[in-house]
Image (cartoon, rainbow, N blue to C red; front, side, top):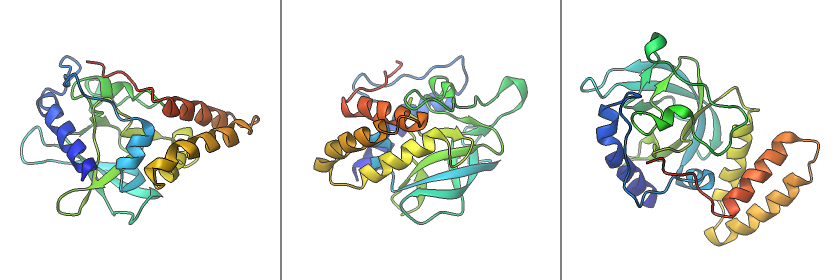
Length: 221
């Protein structure tokens, strides 16, 4: 219920910005808005998937275009849906509307495209593999959770990507009772820091330390 409420609130905040979805029109959020952290994204999601962008579909009007993606890998929950749609999104169209590839080493800042136009990433390239956080809507259907300036639709090279490894860690912690999560974060930080020959483990440990300290990304307003 809380997740759906947050999603609806984010949608309301983004409604006018999505209509003006271009680099020349930045959206704005209310002063109290807080960008979801990585663990909070995992908590919100009923299902987390890697999904390949396969096409787009026109919606009810010119602003309701939808990007279609086919889930291929399940990272949390079940089932693996046959397809998901990102509302208010488009496939890239030449030089004037290009998707920016996510940095493979980034774990905290959102894709640069999330800082333009609609406050969420809304331009994607065919074949991109996206990590999507899905929640159930009022009808029970799985839909992408979108929230301003968050890492809710990052693209990855594959299952071995750093972001995928981090999401798996956060997804596992999100399944624990809330009172146990900080202790588990500390435990996983220590275990990952011990893997001194694995740069990905050290990077995830550092990100978990940020999470543990409650530091958030700015609202970019």
